[in-house]
Amino acid sequence: MLADSERKLLRILSNYLTRHNKMPNMEQLETMAGKRKDQIIQSLKELEKQEYIQWENKSSVEHVVILEAWERGIAPTNSPRISRGADYWTMY
Image 1: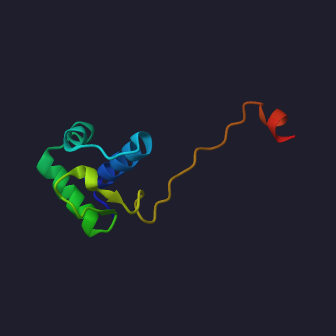
Image 2: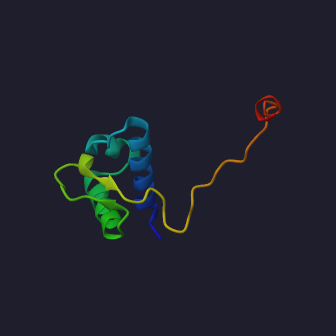
């Protein structure tokens, strides 16, 4: 089970990569996570140790590769499907 700071950082990295198609730099991570550089590096090392990420070139955060975007054992939840009446026109 991940600690809150590691879980938050993993979600930030995953969401940023999905949205911008690249990894954030350290300054962006500090702003988004609300943590200092040393705290972020410690969390990244813990994520690497638990094999959620791969971070071979530690010269930059932009070299992080996400192996698993979600905490193990906890699948992303799908929001319930809400029908707005369009189903009748699109399903039949």
